Length: 194
Image (cartoon, rainbow, N blue to C red; front, side):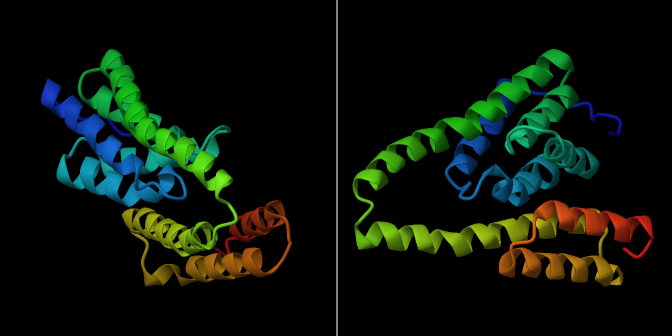
């Protein structure tokens, strides 16, 4: 990672961080990663609390690590906190970001799951579940677009985009295990074709 920023944080800044994650929590249909574009807009573009490289590294490290997908929120909070003063404020950033992203969505999910299970035979409940699929897919596409653009990707990287489209099509239309696709991508990269 790059050299941290040196920010001066007050109570209002910490509250804004917590409040932003509270608001994103209810928008995270399909997982917290679907709200990464707005996190980038808020943390990097608007508040300037993180650098692009810190944002991308936080997501990359968390996605590579074993464990829940939401770990990138903790790393983003950690980096904001470290930029605001050091290890103790880093822990405060982790705590506020994770609490903000988890409380509303966890509560809503618990209550909705209980209601949905009791009413699972209703046509409206089945239609709602089917209607969420395109929303989740489009949010994931927006996230990947933001992450790809932050690394300076352009049309000159058409082989990567083509491989992504072909892989998505294979995953959608076949039962080939994802590890085989990852291995094929690794081989293409090793031979310098991608």
